Structures are given as structure tokens and as C-alpha cells.
Image 1 (cartoon, helix red, strand yellow):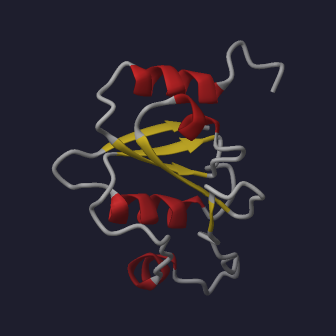
Image 2 (image 1 turned 30 degrees about the horizontal axis):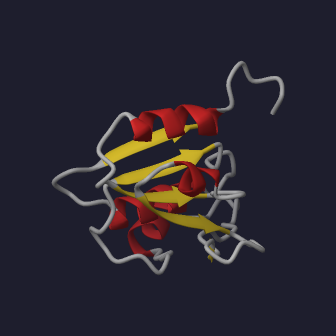
Image 3 (image 1 turned 120 degrees about the vertical axis):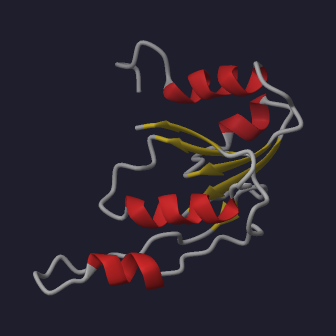
Length: 126
């Protein structure tokens, strides 16, 4: 990531530091859990696989058919892809460069499920 003027994860860390540390954060696609290590907030770090004990290893996506008969609307309405987080339990959902795959709708649906409806902020960089 040396070609970025500033690493996106650092921008997100600055944003979180400038807001209340009482905000609960879900870091979807956390990588090395840098956000959790650099802010005072409660951060749920989630990634597909990790050797870091504090990271929740979780498969959030499924490869979907690209066939012409695929009904995306039915998929969206019926597909459930859940992390172990409770519904409406998160204030901020972070996607730092993790929405590049073709299965990003399932990530966004899961973020919508866990975000608190009365105070939802989605900070995304991709």
C-alpha cells in the first residue's frame, strides 16, 4: 500500500479517534486488526481467517452464480450471512478496502443487520 498518499486504515483510525470512544465498531475485513489496536473503542475485528486470537474468523460471503437465470432480488431477500454479532449492536461498520469482491452485497446486508437503526454510521473506503 505504499502507493497510497495515506493508508486508508489510518484515515479511519483518525476518524474514530475524533469521535466518542463509546462507539462500538465492527471492522469487516480487518486484516491485522490495526484499528482495534489503535483506538479506545470496543472493536469487533472480523476477517475470513486470522492467526490473531482477538480476530473473529468468519466466512461472510458466498460465491453466487453469474448465470443468466440467477434471481438477485430473491437472493438478497433470502440470503442470510451472519457474523456472531447481535443484531442492532454496532454503531460504526468499517469496510477498509474490503468491498472489492463481487460478493459485497452480502457484506453490506450483514452490516445493515448489526448496525443500530437509530445511530448508524457506515464509514467505507474502497
